[in-house]
Structures are given as C-alpha cells and as structure tokens.
Image (cartoon, rainbow, N blue to C red; front, side, top):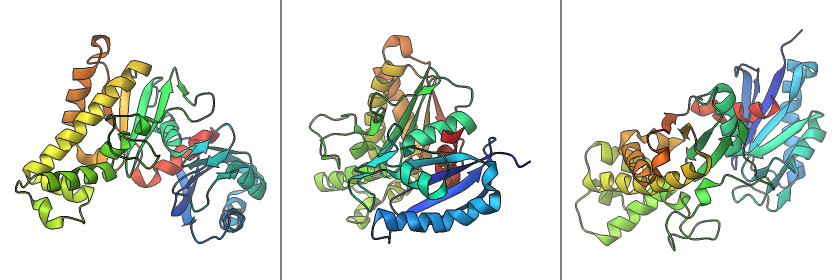
Length: 313
C-alpha cells in the first residue's frame, strides 16, 4: 500500500508551484506552471487540471490525503482568494472549490504566510513549539502567528497581518491604501525606498549613488558588507523599525521564538543585530531575553509547497 501523500500548491502572481509531499515533509515529485497567461480563472483551472491530473494519476489517487493551497489573500474559512493585488484576476475567487471540483479531492486554502507558518510547525524550525511568530521578509512582509499550538486566523480568517501594522505614524503610502505599514519599511521594497529617499536627502559619499534609480536590496546588502556607511545606516534604520514593531507583537502572543524567512532575512547581523537590540529595548520587562530569533529551517525553493502540504495533515 502506498504511503499517503498531500499535494501542496503555492499560487503566486507569476507561477504556480506544486509538490507531492509525504507526512515527513519529503517531496517525492514537484513542478510548476504559469499562473499568468490565462484569460479567465476558468481558463487557469483548465490548465491546472491538465498539469496536475496526470501527476495525481501517476501517484495513485487512492494514496492522496488531500490538497493544500497557499495563496496571497487566501481565506481558510471560505477557501477564497480575496482581492489579491498580485493575482491576474480581480475580486473574490472561490479557488478551493474550483480546485476540489477539478481534481475531485478535498482542498484547503489559506494565506501563503500562514501556510509557511504551518510548514515550520510541522517540518521546520518550530517543530515542538506551541507559540511562535513566522515573519517573511520578501517583496512585502508576511506573517503567521501560532499561539497555544494553533494558527491564529481570527473570526474572518484574516488575522496575523504584521506587515500591515502601522510602524511609522503618517509614514509611507502602502499598496493597501494606508500609510506607514511595516512592509513599506522592512521589506526588500521598503529598504530600497529608504535608500532612494536618503540619497535625495543628503550628499554623503556612498557607492549606492552610482546605481541611483536602479537600486536593489541586494546592492544595498553588498554595499553594507563592504563597509559603505550609508548602506550600514539603512540596515540600522530598518532594523530599528522592525525591532520596535516586533516588541509590540511579542506583547500580544508572548512567543517562544520569532522565525524569519525570505531574501531580506538572509542579511544576518547586518539587520538582526539592530532588530534584536531594538526589540529588547522596547519590550515590557516580563518578556525580555525570552524570545529566540531563528532562521527558517525549510529550504527556500520548497518552503511554500511544504507549507501548503502541511494544511492537509
């Protein structure tokens, strides 16, 4: 008898990645296909079925425990993707229902960052933990909060949006329409925004000036590792804002650890020495020196698939 498998699916704005995963977190097969290039959601579902139908047939439908999907703005209660800004289709999409009908398997869908938190809980750095926060530092800032062993969804499925906590009052305009959200400062996009602002505001010597208009988070990182003073200041400023915001988050759930994932999370002490200093400085004394900082233990390329598969188990 074949061991049970879960189909983990990560629906991104550009590509849809998938993998067949066993309960130990081992991916037995994986692949991807474009999310874009389909005129309607119905066209996408046809492509979805054409891609994944043969994969499931080969694995044996009888061995499938179900399908888990991580998607931006995904709601676990309704199975819908709701007004996701980076999706090719606007509005409310009943994705779990459409996929379940197409592949004839039980399907669960949630926000992509929540899926990542479940992946850490089941397969990664949070194994055995009951209270932790996962923070993804990528193009935006995502998060998943686990308290008392349960992922916090809230009454409507949209809880745990650390990226949209107001970190700087009356600050930068965010894509969500508000001002000062954490992700406008502590994401790869936010750190570039900081660099561009600072280059306009002062004339200090920096290697970043030669890249004005085309600065990336990697360029800032590389400049900082080479001792560029402005780049180092940018990391210190970013770390301060993130650390202060995490101090507020700790006061709500009192986590054992905060786990970081994403491109900006690979900055090491350039960023996290400042994050930790400013978090501890702003913590209520009962929380001080209790919260560990950990890097995700999931492989970058497969983290989203593993997180989505964890929904099934």
